[in-house]
Amino acid sequence: MTELVEKLKNNKVLEKEEFVYLLQNRNETIADILKNEAVAVRKEHYGNKIYVRGLIEFTNYCKNDCYYCGIRRSNANAERYRLTKEEILACCADGYETGYRTFVLQGGEDGFFTEEKISDIVYSIKEKHPDCAVTLSVGEHPKKTYKAWFDAGADRYLLRHETADACHYSKLHPEKLTLENRKACLYDLKEIGFQVGCGFMVGSPFQSFETLAKDLLFINELSPQMVGLGPFIPHHDTPFKDERGGELELCLFLLSVVRIMLPKVLLPATTALGTIHPQGRELGILSGANVCMPNLSPESVRKKYMLYDNKLSSGKESAQYLAQLSDDMEKIGYRVVVDRGDHADKTKQ
Ligand code: SAH
Image 1 (tube, rainbow, N blue to C red):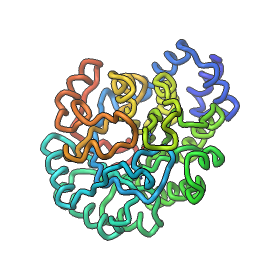
Image 2 (tube, rainbow, N blue to C red):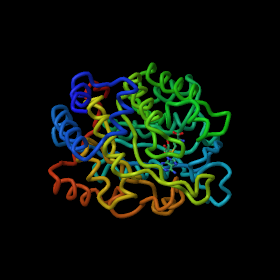
Image 3 (cartoon, rainbow, N blue to C red):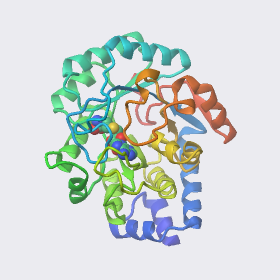
Image 4 (tube, rainbow, N blue to C red):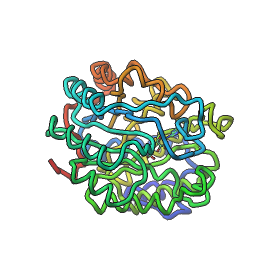
């Protein structure tokens, strides 16, 4: 086992069977060693800085029917909403005042928000806040659409690959959604010049150490600037309502592994992590994460963007409480900074 740990530290990657072995035989001692290494490599590139992103969940309409997701098309109980361009700009203005320099626009795949509409929103945000980065997270689209959004000024794109095993993918999604297309989108985004984020849920139904090993190998292959990784949490109005949720300990272990594989990666301690444990975010940071994404959406719609049950939407999770988040981070030796927080290899302004 210690050999494997050394190999991971030195080569930044393992063979698939070695990853399986590492995950299967992990214990507290191994987790501590990896955590210390993760914290050390992050310190080298980012010191004790924590970057924050203001998350704006601007639509919960979605044409897709992912089995795990609370805003899936078939969920008739979801109360649907869309923010107007003015509301989105107001969120940004509010966030800018508070100290945010990255805005993440996330939503379902909502045909109402055409290529042109999103381009226009991105352009307007960048016009008003030229010193800010804009991240989009609105699913799968043609390359030409991604290019239009990049040209409008978008800097980053989050598109979790969800699982790098095609068979597992088909158990989480309806037939017309494929891993092949998801991956193709990620490569398109990368080619266009976006800082790209992939990622997956920990403990999603049918996940195994084998599929997780494939996730880690895919992350190594794509070498993204960001990785989103949080526990699967069942939602009561989905086909997976009775499935078990992901475990905190495995999430933290994987955060450390990903940090060691990609030393400069921007790695959020996710809302989902904060949802399954009161100190989830802090524990995430202490395992190698360096980003927090509090919610900037208007209070009135926050409860409607329910991807999973009990999703946090107030207190520390809300962007207005940046001071409290800063205090919590200071207590564990970290510093929330007012900064775009680009990947250490990118300085696109
Ligand atoms: N439509 C966009 C955004 C999806 S929501 C897209 O396709 O990328 C953002 C992420 O939330 C998803 O990628 C998924 O990994 C996560 N998510 C969805 N349902 C979840 C659940 N029940 N538990 C935990 N995470 C979930």
